[in-house]
Length: 466
Image 1 (cartoon, rainbow, N blue to C red):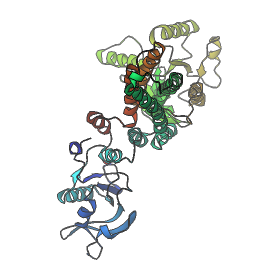
Image 2: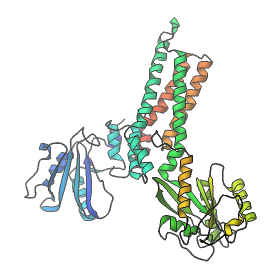
Image 3: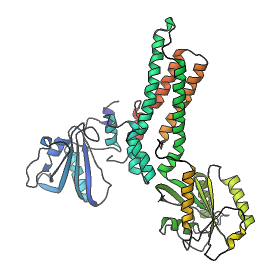
Image 4: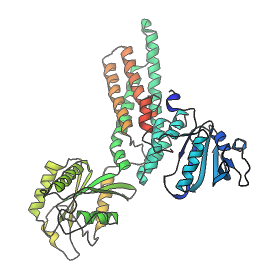
């Protein structure tokens, strides 16, 4: 890949901690001239110049950052010598006080002395280009930063450690071995020799198809774990949807009122239950809209219903009749929700002495009082049961990246062509061509095959400073 496209030979700098005021901030500098630039501005507290190039790798040094005669801050400097750094380059991390003014002054000083402000994800891009990480591991860095639950963190850590990369590399290496044998056959085509045993090749292709298919199936679970399992709270106006959301979140997120139609837009927030993130969505009540604004809210409700994995249908158990509820269930199941969505019925406004629930026969309902916070645990248990029913094994490789799923899908499609070709006894040249296509798609995952556009798309989604 062209280094000039990414200005790969220069030295980059960025704030590595979140923007804003804090106790400390960390500014990261990486590139061949990192130590040279730092030597221009870093001094001992007594004002003596400090030569960072003379210091041992992986050490921390105390001193001051000076702009000419002006001391900007007292700092700690961590130095990492290539290739033993995150990026594989000479790297410096400056821990300064968290004043926004100090951060900006140090950044400006580093730029004026030869550094360039980094682009989003450019530090991790350099780690990839310097073979510190493969592409799937680099993407796992972004997932790790964004992880909001134990499950999402666990998946990202496994990918960062290379579990997924190892599986893909193993499959690709085996396939490449057969590709080389078939290519060798083409060189001896006039002698009608067979170096690649077709039965063994079929077995390998079937093995790769089976493993790739399992990984593709894991994407559904991995994607919802990564982004939070969407749970839409639906029901008639004034059924208690907003009250339930507030109870689940343990905060007054939604406005609660006796006036029907108070919630006119979609309200979302995420909570963590037993290591899994659930994204709760409080929707506008489903009814005939009274005005244009409420109509927009109800339209968004139907959109969120279609996107949800779980639906909480909440109703006032005192006012609802069994026949009406049965009709609502039938309509939801036949017209509104798919067979893949889980419908959980919640009878609200039940106090300890209320026996109204006896009027609903053979309909599985969880009875609660959102206002009194009674039996809310039954809802969280229902969510846990949903996860358990999916048989998600966090100890296996789970993919969370749509790009990986697409590449695996294309790999399976091509390998099925290989199998069909072998059964039809097509020429080795055509078999070799299909295998090369499969190797290409597998290589896209690990980064053994890349394009500049692909790298720019992936790393542009990273935060600056990572």
